[in-house]
Amino acid sequence: MAEQQEQAAPDAMMTRIGQVVMLHHGGDREEARGRFLDLWGEIGEDGDPLHRCTLAHYLADTQDDPADELAWDLRALSAAEELTDGDAAERHRLLAARAFYPSLHLNLAADYVKLGRSEAARSHLRSARGAAGALGNDRYGDGVRAAIGRLELRLDGTGPSHGGPGEDPGSVEGPGTVERPGPFGGSGGETLGPPRQRP
Image 1 (cartoon, helix red, strand yellow):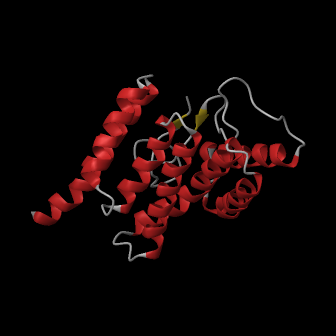
Image 2: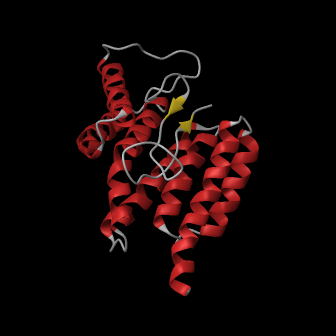
């Protein structure tokens, strides 16, 4: 019985995160940020790395300041590294973290572009490209690879210097979005989160 409750708890938290993601995608950014921060308080700095990775990943999009967005994306990457460096109790967590790395690094590269730090952006873009082998040959994987390519062109000076209004330099599905793998949806196996919306 206790084992079943332990198995249900991570699903419950991921469901709660997913509900706030839907609120954010519905346009209530401030409310979503507040609810995400409440969940962060529940999970804690030492909580489940998968929960912290997913939550920080989405909290980044609710930030007004690019430096704050970067800080949350760095927390997401750090939590993902705990999943792969520690003893992952479940194989799907390790696989989810591997599939998440291209997106995590792509977001960090986009953050650094916003902050005018092109060398840091290039470094994370190389990491995203190196991790892209974990992506499936599906819509999501194709989208992440295309977004990596667009940002590479932009940084090389051969692509557009900026996208349309509200377009993120690393967007996958078009202006304003970066699709994220996750348990709430997406394709290609056990993943971490639904599409991440950029304001």
